[in-house]
Length: 492
Image: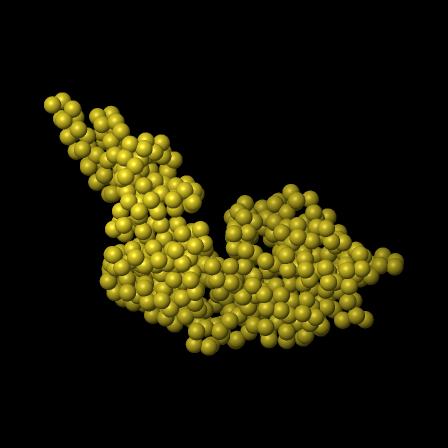
């Protein structure tokens, strides 16, 4: 009788703890769950709620041991497998999470949540077809679930079908008109596929429905700025900041908004703030994005006539050197001494640690180029024989001044090797921005047209040796179009 009474009390405490966890009241749930655990050690219900609490509190390791014991005691319990899959996913064990989620689906083929979780994990493992199948089944089982629809849309986009992804999200918007998450996902998808007018329509619909949040207004601002409507974009960013003053994504967008109306380059203060805050994770992040420019620069320099002949080329300027990724890529080539330039001191500290630069300067690119090299000593040649600029010009809109300054700093026959993001037309065929030459894109970077790069370089006095279309990196599994240039100061 006493055991039955204890079990009843444990069940009551567990149910109440579950309600508190669902309501986000983690602190209030903990003592109830601890009491239930004392009354019914090894309880499956207690283990399940412990795992949910750990997930809500972002401490996935806290409940692992208890959940392992519960699964050992009840290996056929699908819900416990699903919960452990979530814990492993949050802890970074994607393969382990996928195994548990797959086992949960085998144990209960009607569990739509387990199928959806398995689909998300398959997507992270690069198994797009399997992810699509799982998420499609979950969405069909619960067509009104916005989380399942969002996962399915992500898989459809990864599979190369953005039209189907947008249709999925719009169906979710229609089924749940009061939810903002599927609307924001649809707006973001439209921005990624460069359908800025549709993005504006969806954001305005959310505004009129009274459910727009900081993210909605931030995306609206980006879409408007991409259409050249800078005043309207500034208003949208202001609304975003009001609704999410502490949101880092919104603050970044608003910072970018400060350089939109009529500006021809990103302010130095903006660049310093962004990259100082980014320095410690800069390299790891670019690696995950498949960043290609350092390797492409190396390939280009191997074809330089003097370098190919084994001769040293230098001194060389590395503009916007960041943490020194280009220096690492060319470290074994006869290039140097190498002088790195960047506005962010924390990025320069990362570069200094590599020991590859003869000198590092904390300065703006134009400021350095304005100070022409010192007059040469007897027998030396004026200017730099090589200037490198990997993804630096994307923080300038108009390039006339910086190209002219670089040209003035090169020695006769010197090379400027640089890269930019390419300006591509919207879905309706129009080029974003106000002039068709360059436009501010997402995250405060400018993109340029191939014709503009060629014409501006020629006007500055360069001979265009190469101007190739290349992929800069990947975002949302899609290639970011870029232009790789090799410009030469004509030999005297």
